[in-house]
Length: 145
Image: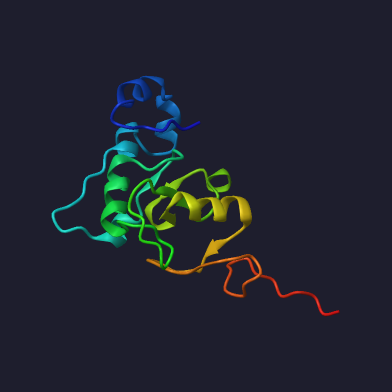
């Protein structure tokens, strides 16, 4: 069982986290929450930071703002109230990684979550397509008939 650790909840989470379980995973509660941006930000290295909670850590959020200051969908320029979306559902992966996160505006996040739309595979700003589009990551050709 993991705890989402933020600076505000650091003391609470540290006291509640079972230390034996954390040692078994070879992580500490400090390494789960403490990350800093280097003087020269190297995104590929930051992209490998894994958080066991559902939402991004403060350091991951700063890296996301640096990498993607606006909605990831091509053509959308919204910069406020962005939602960090997991490319693969968190329910399946149980982790949050920068290289698997895309900031989306509320409208585009709803299209993805409730209507099956998806961003085309890749990084950076890219088109968002409906489920029947051949560029959709889960597209399957319709049966002949």
